[in-house]
Image (cartoon, rainbow, N blue to C red; front, side):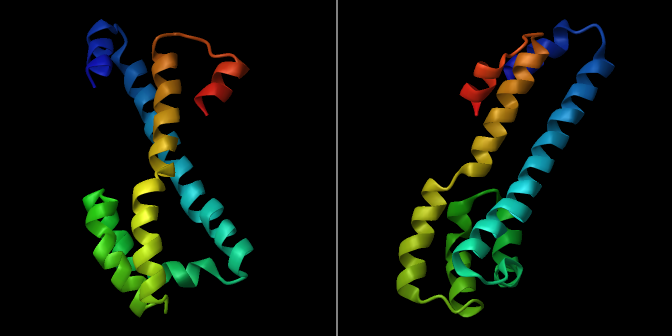
Length: 137
């Protein structure tokens, strides 16, 4: 945060900064939408041969809570209730898999960090070559 604040103080063209921030936010949102609405449902479909959006519909309350709290740990009890009652997952499976997933599955945060690294490099007028971009990914 202080790195961004320092750059704001240094900039002569504030419009350029806000344009860059807009692109950064848009890139994060689009990346998360692609990940959540294309990649994860595709993986679910390939493994189960079932419609992933029907499964997601059963998780709507838990997903809204997760979005509002920004915490997978705070949403965990509600997620367990939703998968057990709405989607018919057994308690043994949900109580074993969901805590592991809430702890280990931080792919959205990883996406955010990669975009942030590229944004900071561009903010400092640093050109990243192919190897550096792959390293960030």
